Length: 227
Length: 145
Image 1 (tube, rainbow over the protein chains, first blue to last red):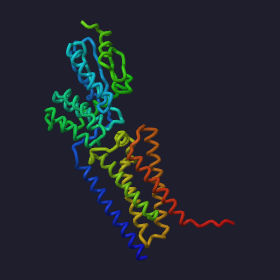
Image 2 (image 1 turned 135 degrees about the vertical axis):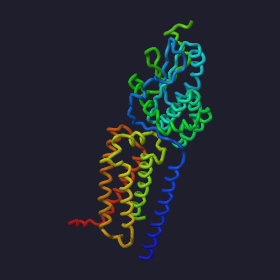
Image 3 (image 1 turned 180 degrees about the vertical axis):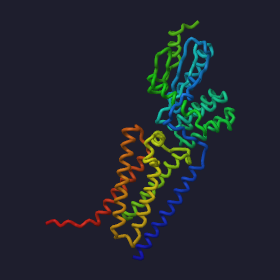
Image 4 (image 1 turned 180 degrees about the horizontal axis):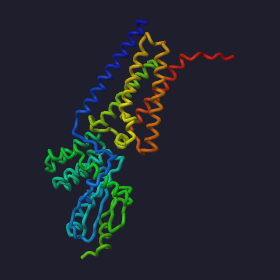
């Protein structure tokens, strides 16, 4: 009986130690990082989309419009952004032939995709969308497998490095100002038939998968012959 | 380790998992270590409330009660008492039914699965099986005539 009591007391002690350790871990998780989860189940309000049709690059008079639906955590989207997009920007957008529109299409299986989209959306308030957009894709390998909290910390650092005023950006992130707009973008993509990223809408056609610059240029040429 | 001790350990793990989910829901923990993102979908769905109470909070309270009962049950004075075994069985039956409802909603209504909720479902199943085995000690032995 004495032995049994001793063994039970040791077990009570073990439970007590585990309880304290677990509580400590939860407190630690509660205190670290400025990360804000961007909710998935968002009701889109009319004000979320009013006057916004994506992040636009290029002239409003360009004869061809390319809309890209992409996810910041998608490796294929990163490949397009890093390898092909610079050619598109320099040879098609800068020359006035194409108006390029980036739309968010965050996939559910990517824990940082909405946070990335919201990070760039808040940077857009200060005219820094494309800088932060590029930085998020460039550093995808550093944050893609991290926890949401760690991802939030990385995004904050790269946003600060892009010259964004952090007080305003923090306020924007905390208020989840653009969660509805991101959801609206996703829903618009779904209505257009997008089911993978990256997907491109060009001249009424939907093209899925990474598009090589040459193929994109050929489509643009077919819609509006090069001058 | 006795079955009652194992129930206590599983309940303690359940306390941590449900506390984590609840703290995330109320915004105290701003991150979710959940690779598929399914936890956000589940937790911010309309089905994350039961009778107006957050299911993660219900889970947390349930695990705390299970833990307390298990801790009482392993005390030497209660080691051979039927009451704590019956209490563990009753609580775990209720928890399994509640969990089954949540799993149905995740798979067939919400269309997303939260990994941490799956961990909780595994824990509650383990607790239920251990509780059944423990209660069998107090059933009358059948004679083989």
